[in-house]
Length: 270
Image (cartoon, rainbow, N blue to C red; front, top):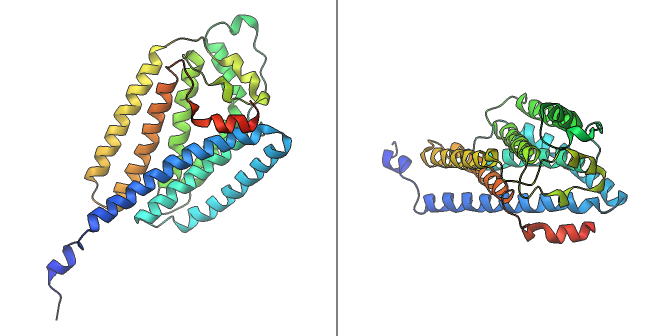
């Protein structure tokens, strides 16, 4: 005898609350990863040994992420959304670790004094070359994740969003910001400071903050209206990254450094 249709369509008592609680926990995990991963990348630059350990660990995590990307490619559950997001985040951790370790950056382009005074097209071209290998690696990794067939696109979308957010930040630092975060750069990347613009509040930064805020609102609204739990989780997780981007852009506009990663800077010795 068929079951009453109402027993199929009615959710179990407390199910929405559990779902929302699970998503809130996932958001906390994203925030924790953002803080810890950023700090770890800074801290491992303490010396050559810690730098090598950091690169090896990040590479091992990238291999793990590649295996995971294949396994969750068709997982359209909240778990699949969280794991897909984790794959993209670990891939970004790997790409960033190689950049800060100086393994994959770009050639050290000489900057004539007359080009280092203010942002210009010739200086922008030199800046693009100086970080070109890192950007090519990031784009290649995005492409590799995109080519993994399946119904779960969150891995490449997460990595792609990380990269876009970084590009906007790089443009802002190039044209000039109040707080360029130069103290985060390890000595081996000191040559990149030739591409840092003057200390000022440029209109492009205000546009960047507003754009990130609008994008975050759009993603959050999309998550609230999503027809499936997977879509709700996918859009919500991506919105967290965009909110963090808006906060990071806002930090570029204030003169004081936030103490969020001071403990890691002390571990690095800088």
